[in-house]
Image 1 (cartoon, rainbow, N blue to C red):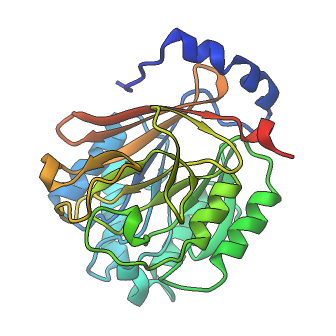
Image 2 (image 1 turned 30 degrees about the horizontal axis):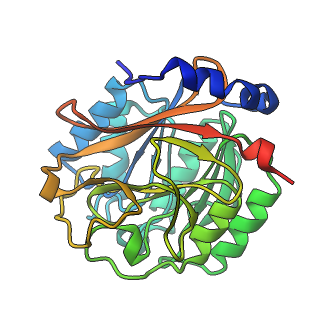
Length: 315
């Protein structure tokens, strides 16, 4: 059963924005995306995939690092065994995926084939610097710190040209202050800032924990715009998360619990494997979403509402 606890006042608040934002290209009612990364092969990864299935998610966005064994066929077989070969599953390259990313039966080729089977056409190089719309949600995949150059410019151009209510910018690696473990500055702030300016949700992996920022008006300086768990997206204000406990292993908190963090879930907080779920167009309100992180034991660790006013904040 999906976890949605939306007070009546939120429904009333989003009313005007929903009327202004309604568009035929918006997501279907209660459209659910599962966000995960850093998966591996075996029982833990399979348990997370079963969670995805039991929550009724309709698509997975995988933020890099697949099986860690350079075995694309085994990784895809694991997905197929739990979710089925027709399940929509999209991913970008992580640092552990590089050796088998390209070429015949590489990760990229298999993911491209899966996307084509869903009737999805993308712009650019799939999983490295690419964009596509799926069920009304605009998705940008880049690979800063892993592969390619000019990712911040690409994000800027793609968001400027798109009019979607919901946009997601996803990549694998992080900046040190955008994760809770030992990761260093690996992406540059440009990708975060261009996603923020364009009003896109930022999805990452790489660190094997879960964390979410408050609504930020500046990522470079970690400027908090609001600490409310009703997060109002506009052009210039968004949030980022790390969902990196898809099955490989769990890590402890190294970085301090700074004031820009809304939720922290590492081994220091008793972390268990799981995924972040985003339910879009909640009960027919196009600019309303409910997000929750759930672990494989069925415990909801984080729950928050997101209202997109990106449409009404466009100049």
